[in-house]
Image 1 (cartoon, rainbow, N blue to C red):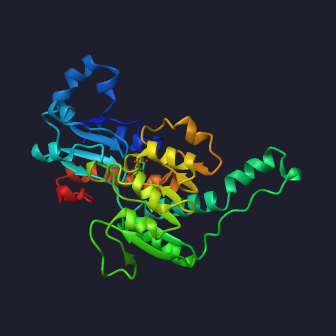
Image 2 (cartoon, helix red, strand yellow; image 1 turned 180 degrees about the vertical axis):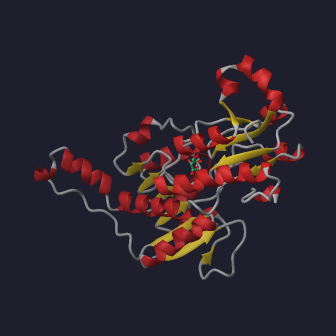
Image 3 (cartoon, rainbow, N blue to C red; image 1 turned 90 degrees about the vertical axis):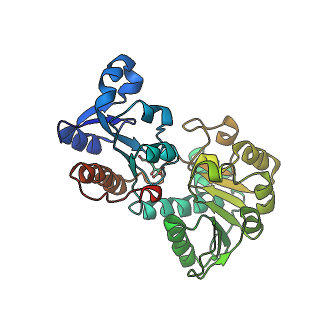
Length: 315
Ligand code: 8YV
C-alpha cells in the first residue's frame, strides 16, 4: 500500500500517524499548508484521513478525482459532505461503539460536576475561601429526572449509568424505541419540561442544528441543567448564554461549542457552568481503539475487503 497517496485533513494523533506513515504515502494537510504542491498531488489522492471535527467539503472532494474512501476517526461525521462523496462513489467510514463508554462517562461526570459543584468547590478551596465558607448548597443527582436527547448507542450507555443512580429516565429521538423500557417524548421541549438534567447526545449536522433553542431551555426551567456531549451546533449557544444569564436554567455542563476551540467569555466567567475541551473520547485507551479502526478501515478498503464500519449512508 506504500504507493497509495492519502491526504490527512487533520493532525492525527502520533500513534495513528505512525501507522499511516508506515503504510501509505501521507500528505499532511497539504491542501492548507502548500496549495501549489497540493495541485500536483491531488490527482493521485485515493483516501482521506479525517477526525470527527474535520470538514471535507464537496469542493475538496471534487478536486480529488481518484478519491475512493474517507476514513473518519470519530463517531460523528457531520463535517463530511457524505452526499457529495456518495454521488462520486466515495465510501465514508467512522468509529462507532469503541467510544460509547467514554462519552457516556463524561456525560455523567459533567452532570455530577455541575450539580454537585465539584469544580466550583475546587476553586473555592484553592482560592483559600473555605475558612470564610461554607459554599452554597448543590443539587442532588441520584433519584433525579434525566432526559436524554438522542437514544443511539451512546444515549443508551448514558441511560444504563443513570439507572445505577436511581434516576427516572426519559428520552426523545427521531422515533420511539419500544424495545427500551424508557419513557419517550416526541420533542426536546416536552422532554425538557419533565427533566432535571437534559443530556444532549444526538448527531450534529443540518437535521439537529439549534434543536436546543430558547423554547427548550425555557421548558427545562430554572432548576434544570443542560449537559451537551454531542456537537456545539445542536445547541443555540446565544440562547443558552441568555438563559444562563437570566437564570432561566440552573446551569450547564458543556464539552462542545458552536465555534470551538473558541468559547464565549460569558460562559467562561459563569460559576454555574462546567466547561471541558471536547474530551468525550479523549482517553488513551479509547483513542487507540478509534485510531486502529480508522486505520483498519483504510487497510480493508485497499485490500479489497469489506469496510469494517462504513457510515449508515454508505452501507
Ligand atoms: C473526537 C468526536 O473529538 O467521535 C466524535 O465524533 O467528536 C470525538 O470523539 C474526535 O473525532 C477525535 O478525532
